[in-house]
Amino acid sequence: MNTILSLAIILVTGIIVVKVLSKLNIPEVTGYLILGIIIGQEFLSLIHTNILAGTGLISNIVLGLVAFTIGRDFLFKELKRMGKPIIWISLPAALGATIIVTLIFYFVVKQPLYISIIYGAIASATAPAATLMVIKQYKAKGYFTKLLLGVVAIDDAWCLIIFAISLAIAKSLHQYHPSEIVIFEVILKSLVEIGGSLLLGGSIGYILVLFSKFFKKHTEIQIYTLGLVLLSIGLAVKLNLSILLTTMALGAVLVNFGRTPMTYFDSLGDIESPLFLIFFVLAGANLEISTLKSMGIVGIAYILSRSVGKIAGAYIGGVVAKVPNKVKNYIGFALLPQAGVALGVALIAKADFPDVGNAIFSTIIATTVVFEMIGPLLTKFSLSRAGDI
Image (tube, rainbow, N blue to C red):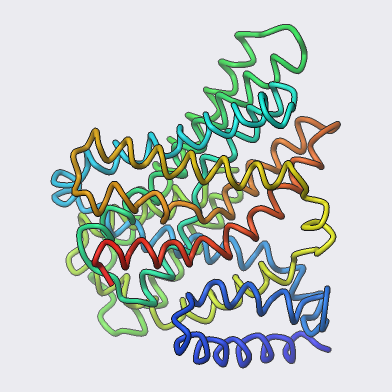
């Protein structure tokens, strides 16, 4: 195999999978992951190691594009009308997963408290890419869809905050001498990361809007928009900021202050689909089957407790926000996909807890694949039951 031949196989087999799955009413994301497992190193070995090594690069670009697209749903006048439900649903959903997973791991799985807290914090994250792909595939529209996009966009911000606080508590418990200084430093670092990401994205968004009058042709708009999105991603990586929050802020500034903002969002539609395909196929290709086999009771407990926490938390939030029954009954099912952010914070846990970090990271890798396979199916189910498909 060579790099170009591997890319060709991914794209050609991917589009064939899309055509087949469209007849079976199965979400494309699920098919891409299964395809990746089949043509990856575990089975057919049709993907060159150079491409597998570039998974992180493609992941950053795709997640940045996803967050940029989600940013357009942060139109101020829409948020004024829908803002409270987004907050009331997203926060209980994140906290619900955190609390339920922590309790189950401590009292049922019998893990140490500091490990249980770490698993609980990671459980709060939701992956927007899979949700967005299902929405685009089935052309979902309506109140439920708009609310869902807002919830998944802000969910990663809650995850960063929850994880920062939880990590500080876990460190103190692990060392057996709680330190307010450590907790304060971690919380401050989290706030700086969130604030810095929003400031960076907002600043680049202002630049995009300011000079947009010089670009009129479709190709010019496409290159200009993609260039500034990639600039946001690159600077976020360089400054150790959140790619998701940075590009989301970029999209939010554009949609609120741009003259014809949708022109810029639509200009990237031509290049998103093949990148999404490659991203999810590589996610499946990176799976080691042995990891799934060794997941055991810890992985099963994580999957079940996180699912219950997300669904229950979102339902409680929906009751408080007084949203329609079709929203509070089904939106929790659409919040189960989990990928990039969860793996990112799991890497932090791996570095901070060398003795148990590998086990935590392996479990999150394995359960991420499971959630990315069942998550799109449940997202489609919730959109359908809500009447937006």
